[in-house]
Image (cartoon, rainbow, N blue to C red; front, side, top):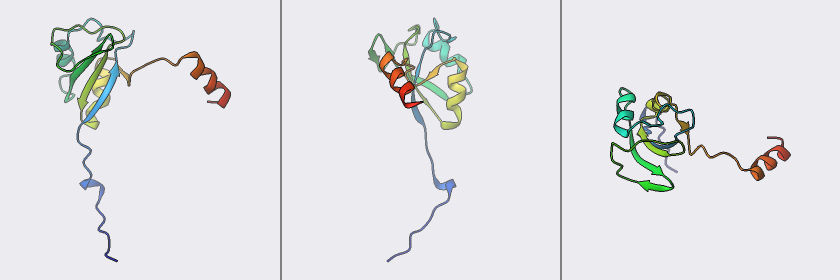
Length: 112
């Protein structure tokens, strides 16, 4: 049987991530146009590449589109830049969908 060659961590490249983030009620991104978010994220090496507004995905949103509470943005960023990108606009990681009553009850019953 041939020997397996092991590679170090340095050979593992994760590349860029695509992450959904929700515009939360407390987000400072509310009311900002997409071009303003780019300015706010300057230096984070991240960019908004898609927008979900009223459950409609805009794959090439106009940069003048204003963000609203509940909108979802798709951010492309390096792993190191992702946290900074989310923090710069006070975004919630993921869709930010609140649990419904049934999920809360199940979690309480399991002791979670």
